[in-house]
Image (cartoon, rainbow, N blue to C red; front, top):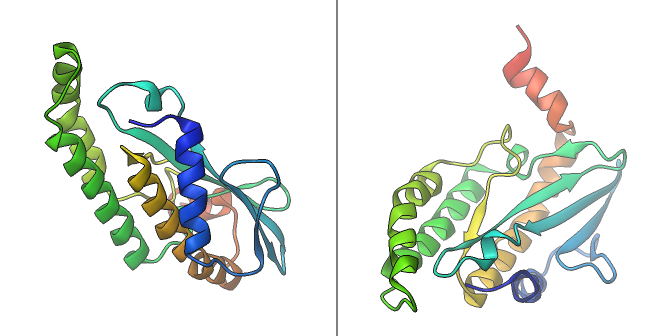
Length: 183
């Protein structure tokens, strides 16, 4: 378990290691916030931690990508993620789950009971692929190594994400009308 500031430090280090495109810049003073310059205007990314979840002993922390365009319209990371990107996200989720399930040292028995009770729900969530219609699908981490790996993974995906977004730009609302609501 690590708290939000440590997650952000490690995530940002991993993101930088992934060598994102020069058009992607970290926002000054803001952890895990980036802006990409695109022909359609800026796209903002915030990899937001649920700070309450990160404070529960022996449980994974969680975060999710918050993405918006120049008009502050919501976009979904998964709206423009390739099938391979989603598979890589699920593989990282599974690695985190395996770490959580493998813990054997607990300061208090109740922390083990709580962890054990939550494992089936966490496993279901890990095995459910993220979809555009759930833009705040939680991604999990247990330690600094996980945070750094998430930064590397998502930082490594951002170039393809931006290309897919530029090829077929639409807000999440437009996507939802096109895919789910129009009938």
